[in-house]
Length: 447
Image 1 (cartoon, one colour):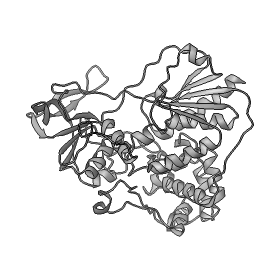
Image 2 (image 1 turned 60 degrees about the vertical axis):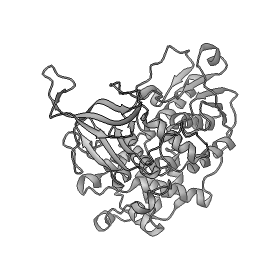
Image 3 (image 1 turned 90 degrees about the vertical axis):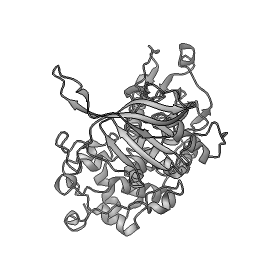
Image 4 (image 1 turned 180 degrees about the vertical axis):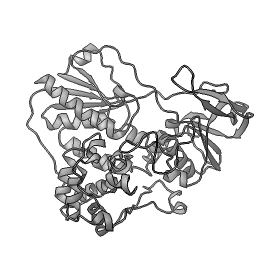
């Protein structure tokens, strides 16, 4: 702990976002960076707690006090080595992680000004790439082969860990490139895809083989070709909204828009009929989570007329404290993202009744305000109608209501499931932790 009084003398300083009037015209990353001096000052605020709750909260077990101390002292290489010892891809989590560690920081309990771990993580990693601290590893091979099905964060983490243990790893990916939701779900304004490509080049140079455009069925015949198989196929089935009018043109799953837009930015072309765009349209996003927020930011950059976001659940608590989920747990409080700041009407306790259209095209959505009351039999609260139905004007609706947990058949003994494919939709950092854990299990199994 380099400066034991820093947390008393230095306030939390975030890098912030590019100005709204500038960023909504492109898909460049919205988050800015602090200069080296300011970043080191932010790292100095870490108190190196005797019981580091940040370490407890992080699914990867990141040792934030250690690499924050190294960063403050100017030893960027040591900071990266400490960070990379638990986190294989800190350039991803440093940009898109909700920072469970920060919510559990003791400074968040005391002052609601936690250490800027996520931004520090990103700065350390970019510094490491810039200064050449990121080196290649060529482990001795043990003669055993492992297949990884799915190249999302869980699959990549599993492949990386197994490769470093000496296994010959082949990754099968049904899409044209690796990354999973990192590439096809998260917009470029949060994670530039060049960041993913940079890491993939390293993984390939370290010996991992990637086979794209191959949708693999993990039957006994396939599993028998390898010493072990990892299934990391994520949660491919989005939750649908089966109300009248669902078939109208203009009603889409969120990922139809997000994935296509990322592909367009990657150079892929689509016909006018195939294109899912909000340009010149009133947009309604159904779902109040991060995917819905990503739809809002994408709609603005495509040139929409307006965006409304509705959520069937009540409005979360405002402010830093959640009485129902106290520190050091992650608070379920109102979250305002960079996309919300760009302009959006947000409403809660809204139930969707019907999609309305003319000549097969969407023109609006009939909704109704509702309330929730306790269920006398326990369990999920009961939904009750409140007020009269109304119509929200919309030419495009984006369904961002989450994903269904996959159901798996009985696999052979050498087949392992990890990430969202195992748990259902969760966080990128949890998927990565799951991939690392499954690699350890496979290593024990094969040893």
